[in-house]
Each structure stands twice: as C-alpha cells, then as structure tokens.
Image 1 (cartoon, rainbow, N blue to C red):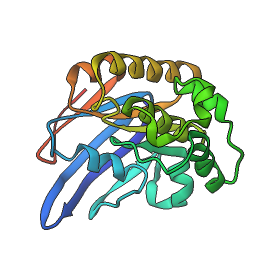
Image 2: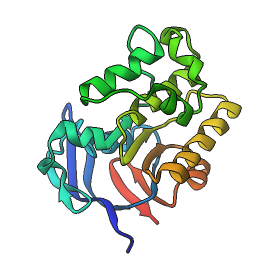
Image 3: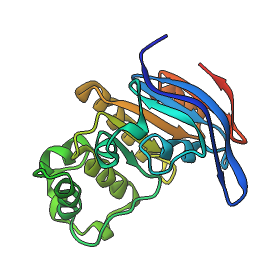
Length: 214
C-alpha cells in the first residue's frame, strides 16, 4: 500500500443531531486523491477534518503517520491548506489578499510568483478582488494558499461554479502544480470524470459512509 497522506479510523461526526460521517475508515495515499459522492454525503465535512477546521466526535485521523491533534493547529493549516468551494476574499486588491495570508504566517508574500503558479498574470496584483470573475477569484484563493508554501492542498469542488473552458483551464493549472511543486491534493468533487482526470485514487461516500475506494 502506498505511503499514507491521511489515515482515518472509525471517524464519526454529527451536526444538529444528524450523523454526517458514520464510522469512516479510509486510507488517502500521497499524491492526488478524490473524495466523490452526491451532494450532502459528507465530502466537504471530511475535507475540513483533515486540517482541523472541524474535529470528529470520535475516531482518529493521522497525517503522515501522526495524529492531526498532535500538530499545532495553525501550523497544520499552513502545511495542509484548504481552498474552499466559494471564494472568500477580503476587500481590497489581490496583492493585499495574498499578503494578508503570509503576514499571519510571518513571511513575505511572493505575489508575482504565486499568481503565476495559480495561472494569473502578475498584473492582477493591483486589481480589486471584488471585481474579478468567479474563476479569477478562485485562482486568487489558490494563489493565497500557495503563498503559504503548503505540502497539501485540500480542494473543495474547485471548478463547480465555472463553465467548461474555465474548468479545463483550472484543471490544467492543478496538474501543472503537481508536476512543478510536488504537492499532494485531496479533491472533493461530485464529478467522477473530473476525479479520473485529476486523481490517482478515490474514496466514494454516500450518506456519510464509505461505499467504495480504489
């Protein structure tokens, strides 16, 4: 079995009296994994557990052989960075959004470099983040994560709001990042074809349970 990026053992989580994850046991190897399934099956919830944006009610999660609860939480989130489904940018320029993330990590922003990695021209740095298209905002979110120099990107439906051409462009950017930076990905998607294009392994959820993996 390939080296584990994440191992989940009997993970359960309830919200509002409803069990969202029901004893999930899974092995997500280094490289690129996809978590697939219908809306409401627990995909995004599982993703948030991987860098402790939420904690399970019971069960355990290991990151590279060590329990996620043993890591300093902000350090873990810098190393395992979540790119959410919906862009959540601050008021101001693209550059100020990127530098905000790096200031929290105590480092200087390499704005031109991370914009280039995310598939945007460096001229975007001075643009108003609120006036960008959804696809451009999604790339700024990606650049902001890359500015933290993570080892792992958690990608929550990264192309769900995009048309086909923009989707293809973002997918090409993600594949290029794997090749250039050696990043590992965990991708949440409802699109099995996208999972096949971007991931080496998959985990399928339905109603909070693992129903298939490979």
